[in-house]
Length: 53
Image 1 (cartoon, rainbow, N blue to C red):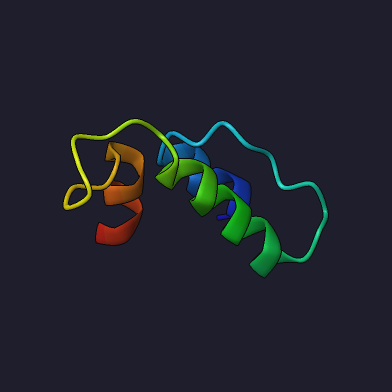
Image 2: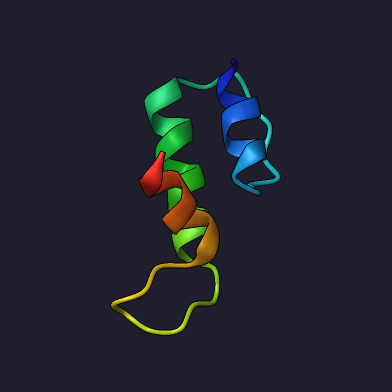
C-alpha cells in the first residue's frame, strides 16, 4: 500500500507530492487535526481513525 492510499482510506483527500514522506505525513496530519471536532479531548473523526490503525 502506498502512503497516498493509506491516507485516502482515512478520508484525507491528499496525494503525495513527491516531497519527503515525513514532511508530507506531518502536513496531512496537521490538516486532519485542523478539521472541526467536538472539543480538545476528542480529535476529528479522520484523525481518530489514523490513531487506531
